[in-house]
Length: 377
Image 1 (cartoon, one colour):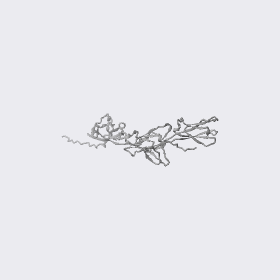
Image 2 (cartoon, rainbow, N blue to C red):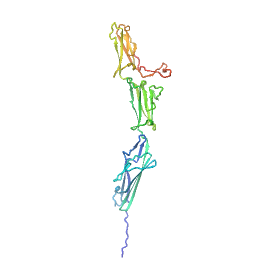
Image 3 (cartoon, rainbow, N blue to C red):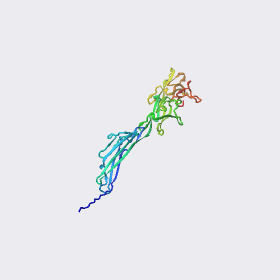
Image 4 (tube, rainbow, N blue to C red):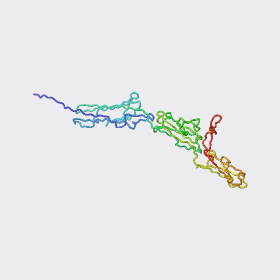
């Protein structure tokens, strides 16, 4: 008699799978600075790193709990791109690399603003004990956002106070400003520059008709001014990017006529010792600074020479660097010469007693230099 058989089945509890693609570095989102042309982050320097990871837990304890990434099979990374909606080929070894041991993907391609990149991953895990297979899939879209990154600064190629020595006249000269965004210069056509002056109470736009020191460039990055007409001018430049008026910057500078340290001296050329036969006495003025004698000092100073004899009063006898007094003016006493030396201003309008300015037949304002200190004898 035969044994009747019936076979049962071993029932295994389902495995618990935890699958993920870890982002180990970089970012799937980039920003593109439309001003500097830089990618943030730059994947050539900071690539996007992806690594699959599979963790399994067996409720029945047949398979030890742990990571089973190395047991994945049929592993496949797919990288596809579209530029303005047209398929674009991305190349392994150039745009990305795959580690054959860890199956990690390193993506070092900078995605353009009008480009889309999709990274896809698929793999299988085969459970031989249970005679089953599990498929895992993952995908990520990479895109770039274009925006202007603003870190605006303004530089000017002069200090905040500029001393203009009349002895080293620069004539017409330029002052340049430059807007920066970060470390890069902003193009001239992308910026607004405006030069102004302080009138004592407020900032006003430079008037090419009234401001004699102005030559050109009040609405450009570089302004041209004339030293001969600058006594004391406070200027500022206001600048900002056309696309970002809120990022306005300004720089203020004082331009002043500055003589520095100087000293006048008068010497008796003839008359230090007066004899009855002498018919004249004469004197000569010199003005010196740290560099020595100033050549043609009357170009920079109003020089007035005075004469007095004995205890007499001072009398003005000449303007310039030399003066001569006749014997008859000495009154038989020792001759004494003195000098009053006053700095001359920059050229400025000649004002009439009624407050108006003197002009020629063509209406052009007449300019002259005047002493800047009081005449004290």
